[in-house]
Amino acid sequence: MKIAIYNARAYDKQYFDRYNRQFGHELLYVDTHLDAHTLILSEGAPVICVFVNDPVQEPLLKKMRDQGTRMLALRSAGFNHVDIHAANALGIVVANVPGYSPYAVAEHAVAMILCLIRRIVRAHARVREGNFSLDGLMGFDLHGKTVGVVGTGKIGSVFTRIMHGFGCQLLGVDPVENRSCRDLGMQYVSLPTLCRQSDIISLHCPLLPETQYLIDDAAIAGMRDGVCLINTSRGAVIDTAAVIRALKSRKIGYLGLDVYEEEEDLFFEDHSNTVLSDDVFARLLTFNNVIVTGHQGYFTREAITNIAKCTLSNVTEFEQSGQCVNQLVAP
Image 1: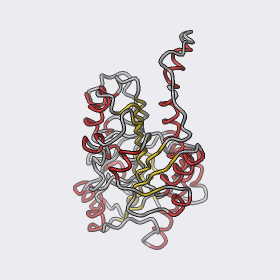
Image 2 (image 1 turned 90 degrees about the vertical axis):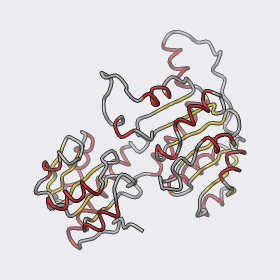
Image 3 (image 1 turned 135 degrees about the vertical axis):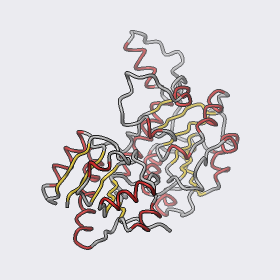
């Protein structure tokens, strides 16, 4: 089938070309975002492929259907940027890549923790300037600390195993308890209890109506002073303004973000020659106890390989049967 791959980067093209040899689809790379104006660039392609930074809501879906789009292939696990209800109603099959690499995101979260609590970024900058003083660089041991894991699915469970290896005490919050996490000694508690008892809190939950702004002023008020907060899940799980207030009051001692609630217009693009217009994001960058990465937690060779293979496989399955195992259906 002909697949129009929007916002295709060099690495997307490299991996899709490599693994398409076994699938034989016709790949059309579109080096821009998908919207009502750029949709025409995919004319003649029954399948459109997008990433997480291309919102696909009902008005656009109607235009896609009218143009002949039969499938929307997401090269991501997350799908909150797509109106699944509307797609189902319009007869457009939507499929995602549910588990491209839980290790990639979990390991990135751990890397952020270590960089923050051992002040690696500041230390590296000092050494490059010839400053070998240790003043202001004191960290703390992970061993024996209490780590709260919000969301213990595939990524959260991998993160839990890693932190168990450091010798941490483990607390979890999830509507569905994970037996593998329990076997590692994790105690499932309420979110207020997790916030109150954790030295480090790492978020690995999906963005749902009930998890939007899960970490707000009230949740932060219940946390330990100087807590380390990590978010590699979805930006809107935390209230960024509340987090900034907590950084200013020193309630949050360390903050690591790989996602941001307004990242759509920022991440995956080079803005180095422009003025940053997002005042909230700019304020985040002024704190020396904050690390922000541009949604790169998933970005490993293994993950990109799995994304390419699974996306192409989803399309092949749809071509052969009109549906696929990773098809998304609104509740």
